[in-house]
Length: 433
Image (cartoon, rainbow, N blue to C red; front, side):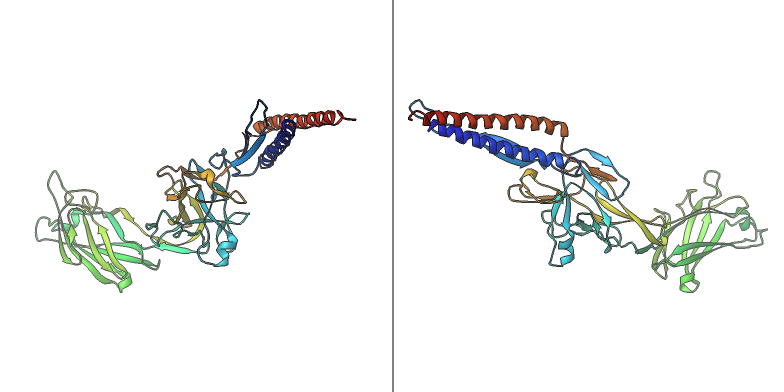
């Protein structure tokens, strides 16, 4: 019995070391595979009961585990949608066949890195057929609240490279100097005109035509102007008329002293703005606060539009996308507009090593890995999302080769045990001849 147990222990040793060699071979074969997670083989002794002073060898059993929580080094690339995770957390993906199958919501898989590029349908996809998943943003670029303990809100990230977009103008800031000499009693009363372009809700170019009419008194100076605003989109209809009076004191000379509304939205002295109704909706026009010199002023004898600021952009073509460290996918347009179109969350679990291992460096959450949660990148326990980067294999070739030498020696030793037991059994057989 003791000799037979020795033979069984030797056979178990051969099997265990063969398993370890298989994991080492897998690690070395994938030493250049982006995002590969190393497999580790451990040995556990098997103890058999013994009695009467004899001992029965139990042998050894091997167990393997993929160390998903180990991370490789990050390397830079030239593709804006090459993504990797710096720290804890994983990227949600789905298989392209599952996305295109149309059989309900695609199943969420997890990975730590990927080289994503748009395919013929605009999906951000890897060469191995993994589609990046994310939360879609609203048309204004804001991301609504989605459930964080389920993947139901995730959608395949699809980039419409033929997309056009524009931003309507909703705010205009006027920095204009009116000539103080125009309100003298000796002035000819000539008006000053200013045209400010804006973009309507359809991206078309329109104008706010502004006319400044000086009030010429019989004597001295009035320091008063009438500002009339017309909208070209409304057939040059008057959308606002205001009486501007300027201060002529030594301390605040040239700044606004009062603004009276003749027609249109009221002037707000707290913000220095007034709101007029143009064809596409309300337009806020900032003319400056009372006593301040950052808006409309009246100084000297020159009419000077010093600064005209406005928001809004003309319609532009999408030229590319980028992903920031918080997982926001920005679409860039040739007019300079940047619009958030998706947010990529990072998925975290209590035990990443308990996930089910699938092909192409993807993993499936399981009861052993624990309940997953979708975090904003950089929030909670998760790290940042890094673009222009890939994660290298977690394999250390030098360590694997060293382990291979140890495994080879152990395998040879177990084979020697089997050989020795065979010789002992042969001797036992030769007792009776």
